[in-house]
Image 1 (cartoon, rainbow, N blue to C red):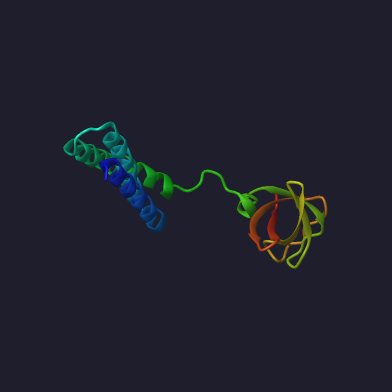
Image 2 (image 1 turned 120 degrees about the vertical axis):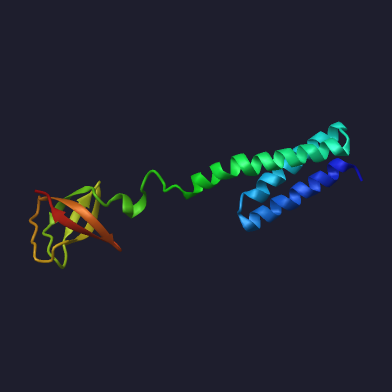
Length: 143
C-alpha cells in the first residue's frame, strides 16, 4: 500500500475523531496528516514525511489551537433574540400596570408589566425595557 494512502486514512480517522471530541487538536493533527499525504504523493521519503507530519502537527497545536480557543471563549459581540430588546425604548399602547399592559418595541407589540408593581404608566409614555420574562416585557418609565 502506498504511504500517501496510509496518511489519507489517518487524516480521515483523525477527522472523524475530531467530530466526536470537538477538541480542535485532533482536527489540526488531521490537517497535518492530510498535508503529509500530499507530500507522500509527491514521492518524498518516509523520514521526510514523518518530519513534515511532526512539524505541522506541533505548529498547528501550538499556534492555531490557542487562537481558536480564544475565539470560542469570547462572548458574542452582538446580542440577538429577546435579549437584544433589553435596554431598548418602547411606546405604551395600552396602560401598563404591575399586572398587564401593552407596549410597542421596535415595531412589534408586546405584553408588558411595570417593573415596579406600584406604577401605572399611561398610554403614549416612553418606557425602557428592563427585562423580558417569557413573552412579557418588564418596563419602567423614562424620566
